[in-house]
Image 1 (tube, rainbow, N blue to C red):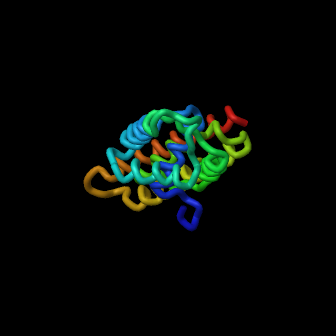
Image 2 (cartoon, one colour):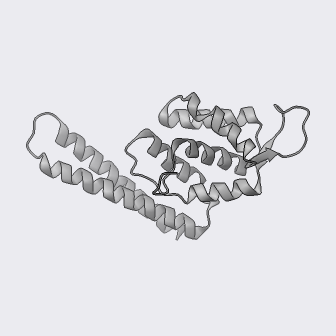
Image 3 (cartoon, rainbow, N blue to C red):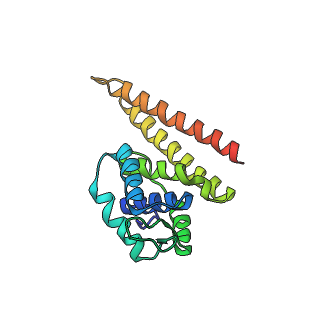
Length: 180
């Protein structure tokens, strides 16, 4: 994690893998496929985000076979007690404004596994995401105010992004109300 407790890309993969295994035991191949598909849909294909981070989960004993299997390829993996503690730590981390693909991936993962947190921690994470959406909307609005008369389509593009941030903020408010 960065100093501000924000996830880095390999930690996003840890969160995704541990979250998938929390929901259901999977073989290593199934887990790798889940990680590859989810990350691929958000940030595109990336071999860096699949292989090595998953192997580290085994070495760190965050995941383990459910029971002895005929081969390592057929063994169903699950989250260990240490893995459960790790996923909760990762879910409670801060998020940066979703201005790049990795940030979007992290927010998507938080939404994917939000139900694994206590109600109180879910509300805290939603508050963090609301604050990010509000900050993003404010920054875009400031930029928009500086470029009221310019060439090109900058103001229209900024208006579109401001509307998206406002929509995200409204959606998060509704989500929070549904949980609270």
